[in-house]
Length: 269
Image (cartoon, rainbow, N blue to C red; front, side, top):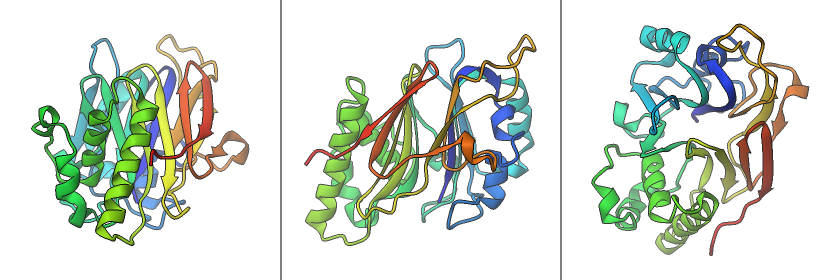
């Protein structure tokens, strides 16, 4: 399974989260501790917000630990809201278009997990994507399909409702097709203002998800951060259990401004 990290707080250099911690995301790409797949080497991506209305995006197919461009960019880019993802493919090709995060307008989305029986559901789910959006798809993953279904289900108006509608739609299609394989996911979504994350599965065996109020790196003026930043991620950045809270099954989180709220999640039926 993939590993991912979402950060919101005082601007820091990306390297402070991606490379420097003891169990950094780059280390997780080589040797994940909380995943059935220890290696996540099928590409990577980072998306960040700066001075522009839409986020920047850099994705490539090299393993994250072996890309000098990623390290160089991470040392220079500062952001107060960014996503990072290292990929372990569930069967689709290793290509830039299949790497996370995915971007549409001001939105970024990334995902870990799989839609059970996706190959048999692909056509029906594709037909549920609005025609105005379908032509923007570039890859072949269930993750990108899910993102465009979110957009088709009112993401720009209400992110939480779009999650409920989309998971309800996917599980309905699975039931109709007689798919027995589970639907499992953790996902992160942002509009550039707040981060929404979800842990959900159809069988109660979701991938892991944690959050913590971290103090990473230093701000541009050299002062230490104030510790109110929030990190939401697949597995902790260190072994200090007091720094991290594991998100229970079927929970949705909203983070921003140093605050984090959680609530029970149930798909629309």
